[in-house]
Image 1 (tube, rainbow, N blue to C red):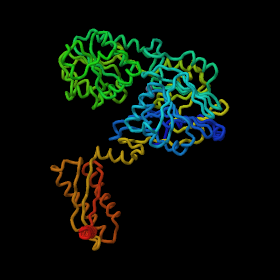
Image 2: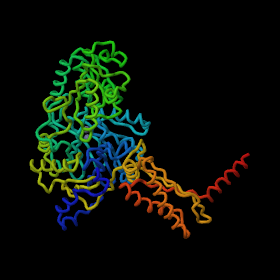
Image 3: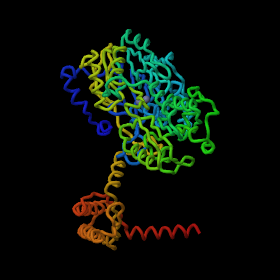
Image 4: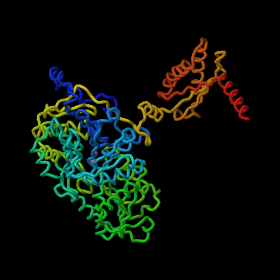
Length: 601
Ligand SMILES: [Zn+2]
Ligand SMILES: [Zn+2]
């Protein structure tokens, strides 16, 4: 993510050495006849996927995701791409196509629709249901129509003809995208894996091979697991492992998994029913997905197998299975509340088993560990996934599966996407092993433009504006980086406010500065320090006010005298807020208030 925020990309140095000066001079775009490919999000990061395809006066967009912030982005709920370029070129946008219903592909839609008027979104069945729910929650249902697509659908515009193929992923109805452009054919795989014994729809091997046979100029392919050797295990193996565990667990079994993986959820529910257990589902996203899954026929267990929280105590422990959110240690999710003993219906009792049908996403390890500790402390037997247990499998292709995709599509040029920088590099190395020449692999950053011209590709000598927008709450306009910076300083160093009263008529300090601090030092133990600090500011201000001066200058004087002093004494740099009260202004305000109240009377 830092790549997008600071505008520097490590890829740059590498690429510029690849392009010779003479070739570089030819990298100008012909905006009328070239086809342009660029990402506003998804390169150099896992999250906020948004890939754009532009030709003349048309743009089609594939996916519209969010990214969840790292811990250092204090108070930030989501990170979304900067939509400025698309806002400026709004009239060109002909279609938004969604590959599947994960948040890093659909989570940005409510924010996107706040900035851009869009009549239709094309999405496969399960993603459609999730988007509709999302738009309902944001009261945006009326603003846009969601059109269902499947592997037989076509989306046609003046220049683009878009087709689809089925892929296997950790959510039902995932599609790969084939884009026919005036300058060549592009395949964007979407998130995929290959599973020879999948639980839902299988990958469309024949169609992929056929697309490869006809010829593909550029392949963009999922890089998430490009450093994981071999092939991922099948979802069927996971189902089997869960069934075995369900059978041998003597008491209650609590299972936590990703809410969006409705096929897994169904496996868990079916295993419970087979073992004569009733099921209770907890956590808002899990309940939502369960409802959608039942409506769509993905979850098939009968209504009578579900029980509510109130009915839990009416059954023996070995007849109960509880499915809940919180597999990533999210503090507000059901499992965390159960672990802390604050859940409305469930308290851990001796003999309870908690099964994590998930792996911690990188970065969540600490919070997951915290929940496991709490659960163990209150007496639960906690089982997590390991290479020996198969309680979880990834939704993304490992190296051998990535090779299979490259072999089926046989692209002329390759651009790894959906991954952090090292994953893109690794995926590019894999592509080279399968025969794509090194100079035909593009490791790009968000905003870089790949130009398609007569079935050849090159990197353009211009870029599209990209950035990361930090969203706090639901406002798509975003927080500026300076707000985030301030929050970081506040969190680490605290705040010091200096209040001083002056009389601007006589250029005099009426009241010596007084200092108030929060989160900086323990005030009781540091009275002398704060007194000294007040004196430092007082002396500096006295000196400054010997000549005529402005409020701005006085504020600067407070900061420039106080900040070095505090740093010298404490080795910390708190935020310093000068508050200058002007007696003249104060008196004038009082006068105007009394005048106003008199006229009102
Ligand atoms: Zn996905
Ligand atoms: Zn994804």
